[in-house]
Length: 103
Image (tube, rainbow, N blue to C red; front, side, top):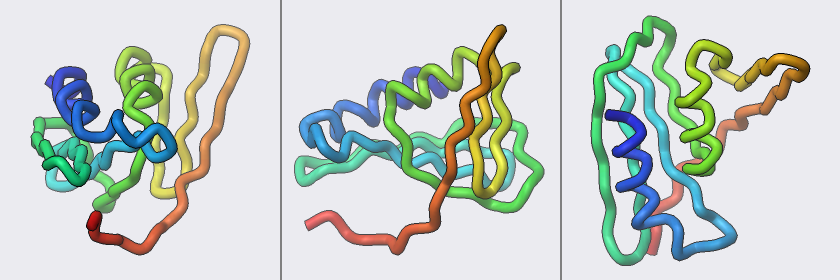
């Protein structure tokens, strides 16, 4: 599932302590998780209900694992992630970035 895909993708991203980020792409009812580094890459599409516009973002694997555990308590839009707990709410902003190739 998605949790295992995140763990596998992080194998390639965790060496870069400053940029340990995975790519999450939502399109056509698929969630594709990708991790890449100079050593290689991992990519896995998984079925997921997603009927909004296509969306792709970078996120910390640990944060995304946390989101997956709280799947009923988080909302994702084109420019925000909102997580609601019992006594708190966390909102993160998503920014559009230019794609860069890893050299």
